[in-house]
Length: 473
Image (cartoon, rainbow, N blue to C red; front, side):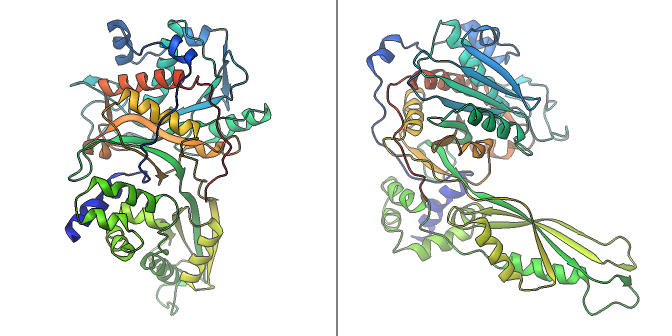
């Protein structure tokens, strides 16, 4: 039983960014207009070649009269696609084209070459997140070439600094708010279709992020008198701070088991496993100590059940024989949806328990609210419907919480429905390439991403409107 439980809980470890509840509810029903005017997502050989070569210019997108293109914050881009029915609430599709650095060491091809090899396109950003930038514009271009006019208006936001500050996305959000825009939903990067990454679980699972953890970068600082190392005091700034961060590392934040979507997912996934694992997952409250004990053993599953902290920077000392007057340490917190920045700050101070240590919050924001994912959640159900259409072999869709952060967090002022999903099969070998070497996307995978957006835009032309939801705690 214990061995089986470890395998089940490896699910959360391998899910990377999300963990959630299984949904097999009925999807949205397209109206007669949508069925009559639908354009099949079948592409010619020439169009497939254009996708593979990653077009640098989208002439139809840039010349269509009902599309407005704006440059925001110098480098980000906002496209406004005006639909034919102004009564339908608009939505937003997002991506970013900035990337993390990519030193050439270890790469099989130059990291910014975009070379194709063995059915894959290599290069920094092919999975995070230039693929989404290109797929959004490619899908829109192909729809426009087919004389498609959307009924529901929508926006495309392409950020330039998601990997750093997200100022581009912040400015786009403020711009839309100043124009009185309220969005039906937002779709950004985040989740994937997991393929053969869970031991003894062969079914693909689509993961849609419905929330994100909060974040806090906290500076700890100790100020003491400096002096010569030949006559040291009993305690130095380095020693005091080292003891403080050691206590912080050794003391885990409390487990938060019942908050978010974890309990529901355990119950819903229970039917996918044999006895006795199915019974354990069906009764998480009864087996909570056993489940959390196993989840604590893996860094990724541990991050699902509590706020995490990581000491990332330590600064002190200028010379071998000089006792430094100042020592500083920076700690990065990823805050569980069941806590707030202020609660985590107070817990941290209590753990350190030394008034000689000063605390300075550098940056911080609370966890994002959980977006609705029930049958009446328009954005979630459109994604689920499109997943079933483009990937009919995927019959498990999971909403969950992203451990990392995206630009979508800046749009909570415009909608309660924010979803994070990349329509791409993520396999075990892909995991290391995120922000690593030999990042690549398969040609077929990129074509499927274009096809997904091509169909999602058409699916969004339903007459159904989002039902008002309060954010879930």
